[in-house]
Amino acid sequence: MRPLTHAAHRKFVETEGWTKKGTARGSRKTGDHYRYNLTLATGEVLTTRVSHGAGRINDPKLIAAILRDQLAVTEDDFWACVDSGTLPPRPQPQEPSPAGEVLDAKLARNLIRKVKLSETEVAGLTKAEAVRRWEEYLAGGGS
Image (tube, rainbow, N blue to C red; front, side, top):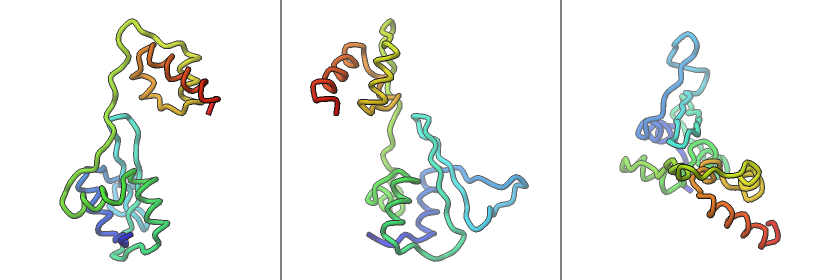
């Protein structure tokens, strides 16, 4: 795993179009880190902090956590964005269920809580697909 420089981290968020957050007084600096937000098409909001310093992070576990938890990208996608400006793939909102097909609230809740589907995934299922996913879950012993 390549060390993560603060300059590369800043270049990534600026290339992808993250919004820089200021302080209440409008100052450019916010403590010892710049803070950035990115709202995905699915409505999820990603947040990251980038150090003001010119150093780098050498700890592979910390780098992996930043890429996974804050930036939500793979290492390859991160470096492709930094090195060549290739934007990382991001999830797109799914089409809602066809009109007239409303999922039972209990079925939707079970798909989210037990089957571990996202709300967006459940919203994109037809009633028949939702029932099939629930039946597959039950046939697998509920795991």
